[in-house]
Image (cartoon, rainbow over all chains, first blue to last red; front, top):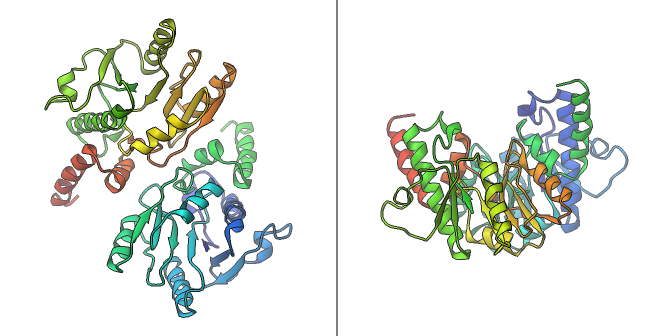
Length: 207
Length: 207
């Protein structure tokens, strides 16, 4: 499951990118993430109402993904989704993947899928939690502030076995202007190509 | 080989730590790194003149490390060291490990040692190169600015096969105040313990 912030995404990139560029980058990163995770199972994009399939895939769907709309804030929407799955008897385990992991590779997904534990947490820089593999219907997320220690505590309080999966690429979410350097240096997908194109423009403008 | 900046180390932590704290943290991180790498082979600390063994190990050496002194700047000192090794017939391959990799674990060292390639580069955040495994006497380092792409280019120009080893922990050098959060969340060594102690003080001071 990939939570996606539809409006005002990537606001902390404002010093480096225009609102139109930020929106385009957010969608390009979402597509990169969907292409990476889709070989591993059914994918759901969780979003505020209004996300159109054709805005994700203007040239036709490159991979299948359901869209699940919610009026709730990110963390509440994720937990409502988890509660729905629990009410349905937890038909399958759930991997949460942030939509801005533009460096994510198939090996990172394989890595977290193969890690044992009721809950497997993948840390992001700055105390975030960039992926969570959830194998228990009783786990709930705490996506506020420095979430990583909160998720560890949340698993412990629920009596669940928490494991940690660490990865350079999965640890790198694209939030701040400095993160764009990571994307240009280590990326290989659509988001990186977009940035290269804009980067060329910046150079031409002498900035 | 662990290059260590003896004076004015960790200056970019100035907004968060006093000069004394920065020096103490730099030495604690150095010790953490030495403990991590020493099981894998002979270790040399490369430093400006004046580094005393007893300042590294005030309570007696916890592990063996040679000290190699140089008046040169970091990059020139490393390359002079590499040239010396080449002149001696390259007695063994060389792993360069930055002294501020406070999260580094034995698995990260195993990982880069087992990666194939004439040169194996381990990226750090911000375009740095946090470890380099060098198996060819003709490689030279370029530790200035955004070094990672320079090292890739340097290997290519020398006709060497460059590989990349990526790791969340090895990618995390402690340079900026925000990096201290990584150390507190994910560290387990002496540097983290030091920070915890100071952290307690900060909390008591209400800051």
